[in-house]
Image 1 (tube, rainbow, N blue to C red):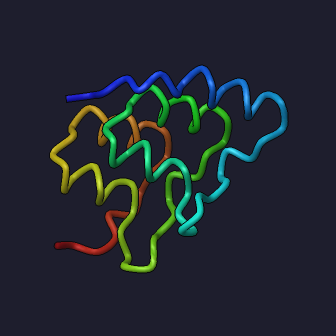
Image 2: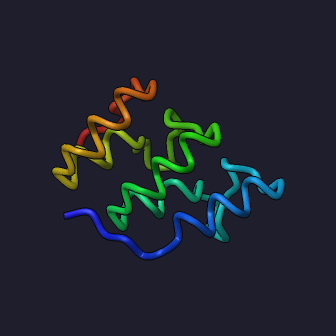
Length: 92
């Protein structure tokens, strides 16, 4: 089930003010990964609209499509595919 953490507007404001939509968090993962894991579809959509990369791989070989598949998040999977994500990455 998608979750709204209230981050979407904050993300939009930060990116509009010059923050990088592909910025990484303290462990080196793109912030879009955190939104994916939290099932925050609105924030993922906002990052994609601001040119967030949907084809990155983490150190274990997981990609946004792979994470959405593992989480059985079909809405997110559909969103990612519509916006250019192509790599399923590592299979569990």
